[in-house]
Structures are given as C-alpha cells and as structure tokens.
Length: 292
Ligand code: GH3
Ligand code: MG
Ligand code: MG
Ligand code: MG
Ligand code: MG
Image: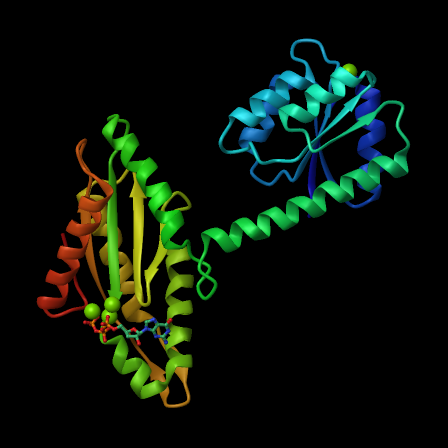
C-alpha cells in the first residue's frame, strides 16, 4: 500500500485532495500544519510521498521542506509542493530546497495525479537502488559496506557516552562439509535459513550483516557484554534446533560466536578484531559455543 502525507492548513483542501487520492487506492495521512507534518514523518516510517502546501501559518511549506532535508531519516522522501503562488522565485526556491516537483493551485486533478505517479515511480527506483547498494542478494541481510558505515556511527555514539554497543561475529561450523556432502545449493539454503532466523531473532535496531561467505556480524546498540552474551547464546541454541530438509534427510548445523563490547576509545577495527579473536577461541574450544 502506498502512503501519501498531505499537508494543508485548509481543511476543505485536505478533504478534497484526500478523497481523490483515496479513489486511486492510495492510503492518505493528513496534517494541517508544518510541525504536525514533521511529527508524523518522524513517527511513521511507511510514508512514500508528501504533498506539501506552501502557504501555511506557523511554518511555511518551504520551512517544512528545509527541515525534512536536514533530517537524516527522512531526507530522501519525495516532496511535491502545492502552491497558489506560481512566481518564478517561489518555484525556484522550492526546487532548490529539494522538492521533486510542484503543482500550482488551482490544479488540474489529472495532472496532479500524473505527477504523483511519476514521483512514486522515481522513489521506487531509488529504493531499489538503495537496496542493491546496501544488502546482500542471497540473504537480504546488510552488506559489509553498509555495516561499516552504520556501525561506525554507533561507535561514535558510544564515544559520546550516549550508549553501550556490542558486536557478535558468528561463523557456521564445518560448513565446507555441508557443501561437500549436500552440494552448494543446500549450502545456500542453509545461509538463507539462518538469515531468516537472524531477522526473527534480532531486534529491529540491531544491524545484521553478511560479512563474508558464511560469516555474519551483528551490531547491537544499547547492549553490554552480558546482554550480548545472552543474545548470542539464544541465537546459538535456535540454530541448533533448526532442521533443513534435504534429499539426504534432515540436516542440522551449528555456529560459533565471538562477542566484543565497546568503550569510549574503541575503534571499529578494534571491535571487529576482538570479536574475531573470541570467535577463533570458540572454534578452538570445540565449536557450537560463544566466547567473549
Ligand atoms: P569452521 O568450523 O572452521 O568454520 O569450518 P568451515 O568448514 O566452516 O571452514 P571455513 O569457515 O573456512 O569454510 C567456509 C566455507 O564456506 C567454504 C566455502 O565453500 C563456503 N561458502 C562461502 N560462501 C558460500 C556461499 O555463498 N554459498 C555456499 N554454499 N557456500 C559458501
Ligand atoms: Mg495554505
Ligand atoms: Mg573458519
Ligand atoms: Mg565456518
Ligand atoms: Mg568462515
């Protein structure tokens, strides 16, 4: 379902435009002023497009647009300005601030709807490109590059004493044997199955990434060593219980895990090295276990 936020200080405009959009099967969210629109954008992560009136008391549409563009979480959201003021300067300001399009009131409904469709097509294309750039195609987990970017940010929060953070690195035990005995396709199924389990096990804020072939790393914000060890053990046990159907009968795998936790001086490199050393210890100590 496509969600469109419409912002207009005149209630009758909202009702009219809202009903036209709903006729096209869009889901409509309404705001009557700038601050309310910003609140809604920050609390809803499923809004796809904003139709933003320019002339509003309290905060003008251009001001709202400026604030959207300054907010890391919502800055890429497409905004179409709807304005009664078609002066060149007004249009130029809006586009320069980052609006994808503008519509001048009174507007033709068919043209407005075409502009909405066009902006949504462009957003879909950008979303897809972002997905390709940040995730691993086999598992759908984040890729290494995205992990480095985001984990770095998380460690900066730790350095500012805002939070704890821990990393878990995990690696499938004797995965070569799985490939050798069952074939690579089954090996791939196992990777996908584990990724699915990780998505169900970890919180939404946890950054779960396929780090290499059969190695995964998870960054856990607001989590100290004790908490990370609990999560790691819970994950290890869930993997142990997992059963994959193969032509040769049920297949079970285990994982080994290493945990590291951040302090104010930790670097990303250091966090990864310590988690990797702990993982090495877990392998040395017999596999299917967690070390920190
Ligand atoms: P250990 O317990 O020491 O980790 O043993 P291991 O056999 O898992 O050893 P290692 O981690 O060195 O082996 C990694 C294996 O993972 C080798 C490689 O063929 C396999 N692998 C890596 N990426 C993929 C993949 O995308 N698909 C499949 N099917 N196998 C992969
Ligand atoms: Mg207005
Ligand atoms: Mg290995
Ligand atoms: Mg392995
Ligand atoms: Mg490995």
